[in-house]
Length: 352
Image (cartoon, rainbow, N blue to C red; front, side, top):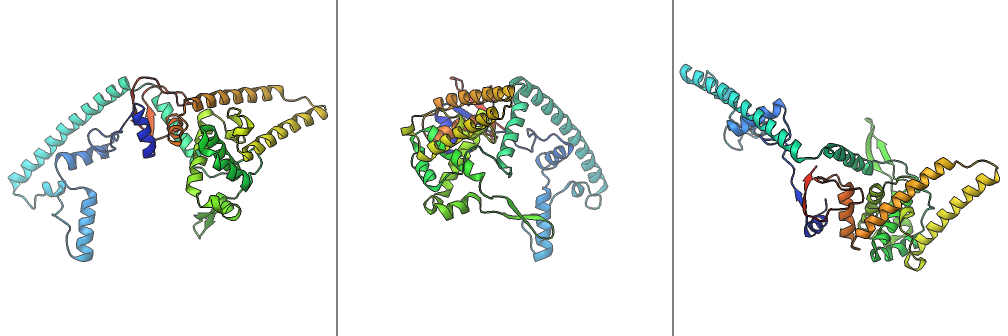
């Protein structure tokens, strides 16, 4: 999660709690290998496998050491290094220590599981899986579709000039970039004998270099708006070919960028033409399908109005609300709807 977003959430009373480490007694890994690693390194003080490998690698390759000689369990109970009585005492001590540590390990795991079941709501795992799936979908490279036409360079310039005027303008500009992605080639390039990915096509960056060099200089900035539009669509529950701008609240034409006005008018004309074609051919329109899509669209518009109504009009505020709704970096302790609505009281977030 972006540091600016974390600061914004912290100033609004949202606390982020770090997740548990993977290793150690209180870690998330409860396997036998994790127990042996914890017992050898934390309880007995033996050196880790990484240190031993690095030590002997340097010793054999360069003839010098990086520290003390590695200490392992095999050397601790090696009968060739210790007298018989001392070796037998060390062996019994190691067995007793391992048995006591196993009891402690099991008790801590049982208590931790019980406490977590009491503190964590039942929806936690389902919500975590949903957020991870959304993150995987955002990173997936695929051929996208949209109902809007390809935006022009002048339209993008006009939308970018008005992007910071409101949260809806930010999403509208990002939606135009999402539409542009549907008309450019950003597919992966395969090469080599093993069939590995060696690169990607030019995509939006190449299109901007050729058609809007002034916007190409602000590539990182404008791609942030594209990422906001992608998260916004997931937060309100729409997907291809519905663009993010299609579910935004209707603004007066004077407050909209020229490129966004043209895109909305083109989308409206396309929908009107499809309805007229169905009626002219004497066919019976799919009322059930159209009604279901319209209901879903209205729900998305309501969610968009709720989300934008809570936004303070800044990029950080919009990014924070979208993070609360779809970010995979954490899972809320309390049930928060997909619009990012946060209860008035202060609460803590748990890292995913």
